[in-house]
Every structure is written in C-alpha cells, then in structure tokens.
Length: 152
Image: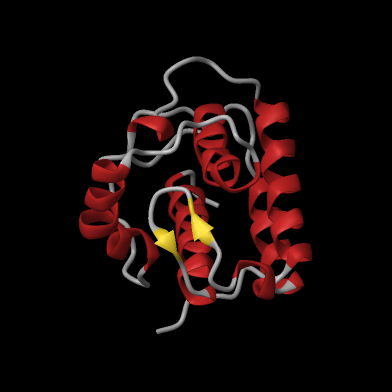
C-alpha cells in the first residue's frame, strides 16, 4: 500500500487542514508529549533537512541508524504507539503552540513546493541517500502518526 504523496498540493494541504484542527488543549490518545511538544517534535524532521542546528551523527552512529532504524522510518509500515525515538526528537520543555504549528505548516508547504524531484537521491541527516518514496514515507508517516495520536 503506497502512502499518500506529501509532495502533492492536495495531500500537503490535507495534512495542514488536520494540523489546523488542533487546539492548545488537545490531549494525546497515547504518549507523553503535549500538543505543543508534538508539533515541535514533528518540526525536528524538517530541521534536519533545512537547518544546520542538529549535529550530524558520527560514522558509527550513522551506520547503526541506517542498519537498524532506516527501514522502520522510511517504509510504509505504520509506527507503533509509544515507539522509542532518537534523542534529537525528544521534546521535554514547554513550547508555544502557535509558533510550533506555524513552523510545521511552513515546513510542509516548503517541502511540497520544492517537490519530489528535489529530494530524489538527496542524503538525509541520519540514513544516507534516500529515494523519493523513502522521503515521502518518512515525512507523511511521521505526521500522520502524530496527528492520529491527537485525534485529527
């Protein structure tokens, strides 16, 4: 089963519509993060692509990530509830809801506007070179997982 194509306007806007249904008081159906932390957590995926604010993993850690985590992150198989996450994705401090929401919407729109071709064979922060399908699955699956976590 192919995941929806986050690089298309229709799918990107559908995800944004779901994000816009969130409220600062939304409660998760599982997990420890509040809604603002979840939005910040989802932004990390895009920070790894667009910003140089997270240190790149060393050779050994990148090998481990490619070997053990890449398939789970880039396949079509849904994430399990309460799955462990990489330390750079752990958000434990409080975040401002509107700021994180607006950042995430901007990241999704930027990704859609750049388009699939921009990501074809582009190297990811942790997993090496990815195909368009792997980039799509990583982006879409992560967003869908967390939006579902908050009931939208």
